Length: 187
Image (cartoon, rainbow, N blue to C red):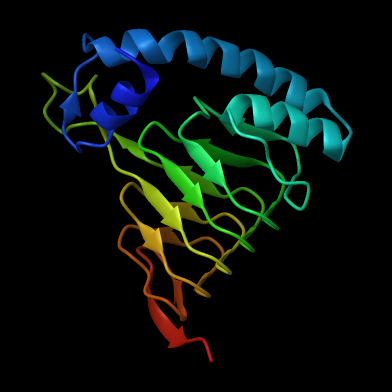
């Protein structure tokens, strides 16, 4: 199974048991990612951090994109980050379901992007259910917010600090709370 086939497998939104061949593809990359995260989080240089993140994500991060360590991810290869993106300290991305961050996005400190969940049934609970997250251009994710699997945050939208977002956020909208609810439109 190739990495592309594995990504397609994780995009189905089905329970993927720990015995699925996709995990044999993922686990060596997880080990490599964990080693690189250690280097990243001991780096004191933004350019070096960008270079290490480029290795983790398997794509060259644009020089206009800044990520402040510490930063964690469990995999990295299913994350795509656009230009002029700022990701503040202490963020965590669980990306087996795929994370896309478009251009000009601001992500506050301690934000969690979580594309992975587990089934409720105890018999299958060690499996994964994954769904992608999309953060559209010019969005702003406030400090300590959590974005859950399958969520799209719309263009020019704002997620208030501390929110838990379990449903799509329309374009030009401010949401907040637990669970996040509509607060107002962005002019």
